[in-house]
Image (cartoon, rainbow, N blue to C red):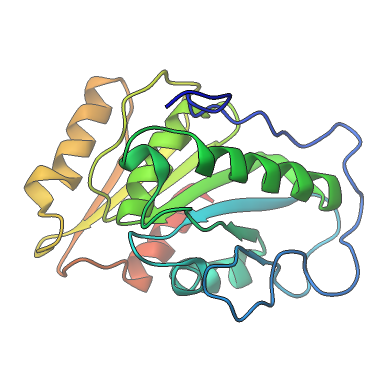
Length: 224
């Protein structure tokens, strides 16, 4: 795909003069009943100063409202903001033809977010479930100079591209996943990452195509 974001590189970054306090009132980009609307989830009682951010990608044919529960409890417990965008199509751009519109939309959201919220540049992570996990790993590796952590819950693969840093990576997959069988997906993802010099944290679990809370909790215990 041609265009400014065809390489999957995000240009948005927290500014040097980032806001020192959270804005008052309703969180930006949230509160809509439209399942296709992006969500910015801001837990209550955030500590003063810069806070972590996790960008969360939903699975194919899903939406931010359905994806948020995967990590909402961890956001409340660990006090980080969640940005959950919506793909323009049934799934994310790079999984159906190439990086482009979804990267551009995410870049605009991050730019606006960084202008309003004090985000800790050392703790910006990307996460996803199913197709969202595949996208999180693909985009996370390309933008590894910004995303210091990548959470891959029951992903299928990742789109090859230039590696932009050395983020820490957590991969989980269910033994009985009938949607994305583990031997062709989770195990293969880990093998390729290891061949590329990464040492991903890998967790197989007794279950199917899912992201059990105890696995998500373990992921954030390890990397956050």
